[in-house]
View (spheres, rainbow, N blue to C red):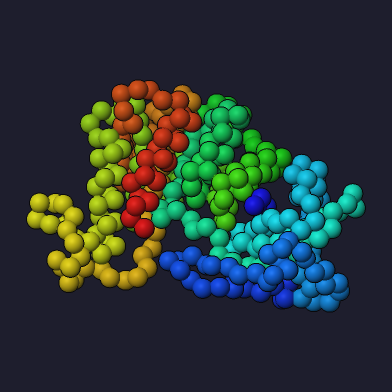
Length: 314
């Protein structure tokens, strides 16, 4: 089903029922009435709890003119709460599109690791590509940063540019099935981003001049520690052992998601002074391999590597 983020107040009808069904392996098995299964929608008119809402103009255009959804066809509306609301088209005309809200249910979970991508500002098209693909990969926070080699003028991103960036993130989140929007922070200098590294976060800065430690080395070590926190322990040889081997292992059913902060330089790369400054703030400098990557390629390669290492933990 097609997915659209809407204003939260659009989905606050008191008559909207929570998800019906049973939990099975963390998933909700949803049940509908026979009318709903057949695609028929009863249009209860008037009064609170009717669950009939008009779609915003832009979304109505998408539903009616681009996707050409017919009456009875379903879509998913999202309010950035982590839930999703199943809706069915009840009326579609040039005057607007109206839908019947059928059910609220849990949306797809966010990744098991929270990635903050501190991206040195790039030319517009390349930065927008990072926003789009980073959202698809699971980045939680985009933090554009100004570096010494950032091109002049990039810091002057007015309201229209910010709105465009937000729209790119939203469309990528809808396309990739996310139920929460990544956060987009204001543009700020590298120093400010370094000062705001969350306590306990793993901060990493790929740099082409680093030749000893690789991203794999850092992530493999950090992911092993995360496994320990999730109920596994290290054996004497430094390998993972079964939780049953150590009764003192953590056994809490829920664990806070680890945070990884990635610092990626601009198109001209990071200067040695900036790297040294980052190291003084506890950032670990790593290599992404023997090849010199474009800034946008380095960002997505690093994000994908972090996801690969951490997703199996949770």
